[in-house]
Length: 288
Image 1: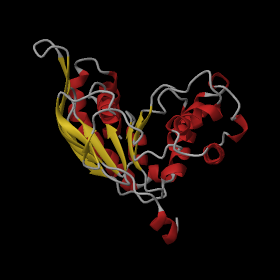
Image 2: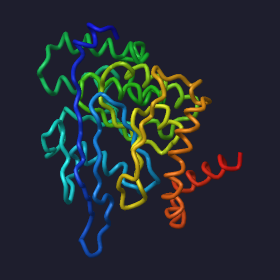
Image 3: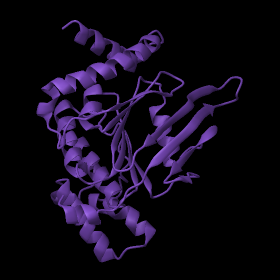
């Protein structure tokens, strides 16, 4: 992106989580998923949320999307309190959310068609551009069942991007993909977002994926979730897979794992698979 393009680039949003607690059920017999949680999803940054299973990552996504309301505390977008879902915050989910009765093209254009704020020709042109960008131009007339898992994720990215949300929320979008497809999707995501000034919050349980993407790594503690640490990831951009073998990458991973390990040991006793993975990764690294 040159200076002129950077100057004309849209300014994206910022989400602030202020002392948020989320409880389910009656206070005496309910469950507290999030407790006294505060952090900022900074404008124009790629923030990554990571923590043991049960630490409230998906709950936070639902709260920021406006699908649920906090029990206490508040969540703001650009200083305005969130009171429900909005087109300024869109979610790419763990499982495909494409409409099975719509073609790829119709799925991608659904949002702007419903909003009715843009001309049909403009919507069609932008959808075509995005489908080319994610490599699905030859699959525009296919239905979701005719697409592979990786293709479905790319279609969902295009469907979110055509709405140009202020904040893009991604809840483990590559979970369940095979290793090769996941790596390809990581490359697509970097291609789409590096240099775009977009605000992204990406949730993952994979430490390598987290460090590879992040500008800021937000680490949650075990349930009830709250922020244990925020690590600034200063790996240079554009990111490449070769960086996974760099000394700085190893230092960042060691720092993150040492924090996660302390939380995971407690969750390990409760049988959390996410905690088991973190403990095993840490102990394997320590034995080298």
